[in-house]
Image (tube, rainbow, N blue to C red):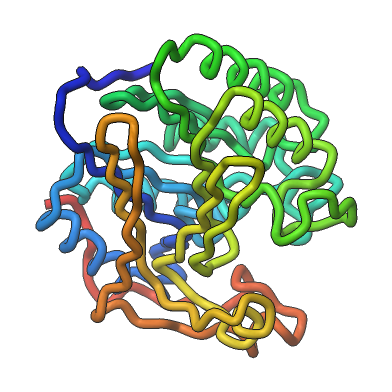
Length: 297
């Protein structure tokens, strides 16, 4: 567990999600370039990436390595969580036929870092969780839940905030249908009950490529936008939102928390709705090579 010495000042934590970076499928690197420049101007205290850092990490470990290099361009400390495009999915809920397994977990740990983590900043304890483990039936699933219990119980008077890739639910927390859009129901119940009982203030996630705010039994649930592609048709139909790429700035002010949605003018909203709605996924889009080098500088 890492820690930042508490001080009587505001802390800015930027949440970025769903960057989908790849050297061979470089559709979204331009938007990430915009993000890097904005972070160099903002200089936040911390950046949290809530998953899908890579385009197709479960199949191409090189995508993870390339994404790691890109994160190295950022000026602030970065904490990273895996998404389904990095690590795969719970085996019974694997839409991409990329179930999480030992080899994929090892590739993540060796290239990026831990699958779950805790970080103290000011009066807050931030906890990062891996949603691919939830409802996976793997040993790591119970180990992560034990970690969550322990970190919430030991935080003293710090406020609690949880980061993860998938949202806990879309609309109905009691919906038991099989899904790849959010945490499957059996694991969802354990997560929500644990967070509610411990007084977690906010669950911050990504995955669905649209900004959205929900409330659940006293907790705020906030979906971050992507920096990569959007799906205009689906997201307007489901959420009545016209999605844009961007990121969130969380302000931790003592025991208070607020956030700002930032949708940079120079980020391009690339719509993949027609590509995915005919049965494809972004992972089978054709290669698109980089036109220039993107290296730490």
